[in-house]
Length: 415
Image (cartoon, rainbow, N blue to C red; front, side, top):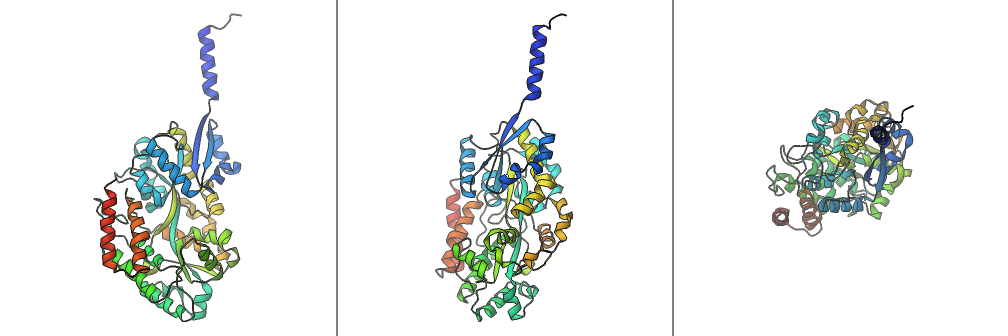
């Protein structure tokens, strides 16, 4: 028998090596999202289709994750192959050029019809290209304590007719010694995020001019100021210990949030309050987004093809999307999941309401808003400086907003 030639041996060796080659990619996220990758039953389909891809997970708390990601993108190294990004952070990161252009590299536009349109737009850059896919979304909801409505014989639909109706409810609650909201600023934030003018981002025109002195912001600040002057808030900041205690005890009557809060309340914030909560639309017929998570591929990744396969699986496959909804209260942006039977099931924690169907309807009615590169600058100035100056210190609304506009423009010079 003739021995194989050296060339044939090398060819066979190369073929064998390529057949067994494994591509390792890293998925950077924060806790809870890492559960999906670690669940063998959920990931079985992915591994069957992609036996050559190995996934390593790097999970950090929300703040550290975004700080490390921002640094890695700025320096050009250190980011994972696939990364989670919160919707609050996406505008500045996407428009800094650190993510792969999914439209050009993977024909992402083909997937636009699969998702709630506002969620798809959240992953776009100012150039109109797609840089991130929705992993989960936050349809805006007004959660309310049932006992306070029932004691006053009030229908939630009357309360949410408009903002004046909500404040009127607050006045009635005050007579019973109950604040309407934890903090008056939440009223302003709800208006700012949901009554955005067509074509604008939350804080800017398409040309990048700040719009924080316009009618929407004046209205938002004025209503927050009025709520404080009438004594309708508990002066309790979100996510503080007092706020969590208030959600447990019904210290205040209303909380604006994303639909995900229902899952947080049930699982760890206030698990003994089942049946005491209701879910209503936002006041004045508004629809808006409260949080959410997107998936993106850093441009520095050496394994974009493999990363995109994982992105597609996590964002477009019903199995992991529904799993994250059940496990993490992460509401899906994937439209086909809304046909699942669970969306029409009563939710005992919310008094038997079929709230998931309500949230799905909200998700499909939220107007798309393109993120802007300076959103984080404007958000910080408006919510952390200008609004407290009005609510806490009594500063004139229009003066506070004019000063905020000047400060935003000054800080934008460094972009």
